[in-house]
Length: 212
Image (cartoon, helix red, strand yellow):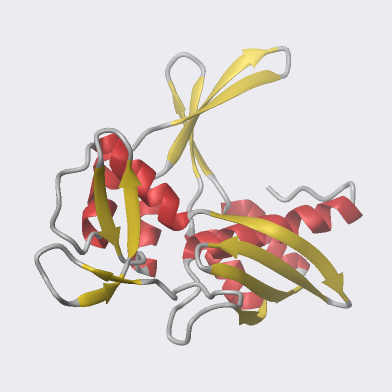
């Protein structure tokens, strides 16, 4: 039976007979474990808003991009999601825990008339998202705000990708979803991936269209 996003296993916390739904994260060396709940949408929005990258122009139409680490935000989100009382996780371990509970990937994207059906593999199972094809005005607004840039010294550009932009477009064009436990909202990182896949599919049909 295929599971659903939000359907976490029941785990007995150390020093307690109570079982709570949680996601176990294992660190092999040194051996340690943490039990996490799912992140709340507002927590993820704050976390994703802090993400940024640095782009360096190398000349000759070449450049390189580097993700900027955010250990403070990693620890903040990890601490908010943790529901057990165990040993401390360092910055790298906290980031690993976050990546495990937020991991997902696009499985397929198929057009069905004026809609697209996009499937995601997520923790717990698989979800589907049926979305309408955006209007041109929606696409123009998306491209206008999809990322913000700031020039830094030495030819470096700081880039941020506000999560509210893809989330707003997703909320406007979503028709239906499956694979989510009742009461569990579609998290913003799922919405962002759906929009990214949708715009890539549209771009493949129109060589003059740019998703960014």
